[in-house]
Length: 432
Ligand SMILES: [Zn+2]
Image 1 (spheres, rainbow, N blue to C red):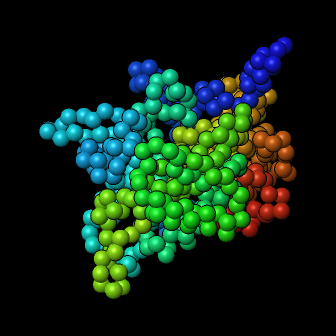
Image 2 (image 1 turned 90 degrees about the vertical axis):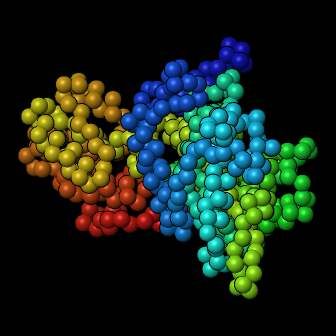
Image 3 (image 1 turned 30 degrees about the vertical axis):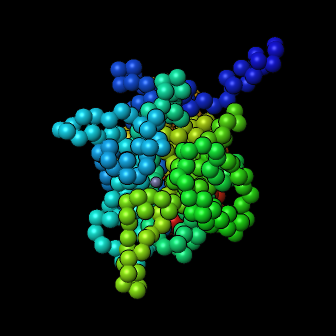
């Protein structure tokens, strides 16, 4: 075997989200819909829904307020924002509509800037944290498209914080804290923090003093958090410098998942104002930030990171009920009902689907496998098998469901907390 063949074998063994996506029926594509436009199957949609709900809840607790805005806008909107001048080659071509030209948006920022200026704003409203999990589009060349990592239709976990210059550092620091909290819950590790600065060329808005001020603020935030970072020339957004949080796939290829950007440019372009304590009009700063970035890339990474064995709170199916034979079917169906009523995603693996061993193997990625034999059916209990091979002591059905629910609600990575007791379940408890 030569080095290339060895590398190929190695690559085959690495989790690949495209391969797992098909095997686990998470997502797929169809040439008739088009390249780079994946659709989500029920199992993938369950993961995505859990992820989106988590992010919205995280943001709500951090003082963000959510909006919805359309995925289209007039070309003029992007001329004002600067996207048309700096980013046009990555945008879909405009569509003629009643004398206007409308385009699929390449970012959410201009919509949020327009929402900010939809009425007069007071300094008392700042920092105003506007969040949206919204669609955007990128005209990627067909040669680079694949799986969920390079797509043309993107669901972005985006937010814009409109604030005073004095508030920027605290907002960027808080955004960094959210990113780190989310990574803990998702079992994601950042491999590198990158401070992206402008490079040569005319892609960047010219105002060196503004750039320097924004970069200094971000350096201060990273230094205070004790985070090692690398400076990268030429990776900045055209309107300002940014902190990029880098992740790596199992082959070591890096991608940016989360970003924090400081922008003095778009507030000026959209002539954003707020009334200060002095009664005069002032210009806010915009902090752009994404916690999990694009939902597509985040899910692709989670699939590979966990090799399909998602943390219980994200798993498409959290519990599978396995009756040993037909006699235990009613008890197993009742367990599934009970799980569904408790807000869990549960399924029944009917004895018709094969031997108990075969059904357990088929459900090997399901975090909780509940075997129900004659004894359990009579006793109203359940013998749990955890995905990691552990087998907790037999439990009454109510206690087992409560324990699982507790782990899921707390979004714990750990499947089973041996110290926890079923009678101490705190519904709705937050992760520590
Ligand atoms: Zn933005």
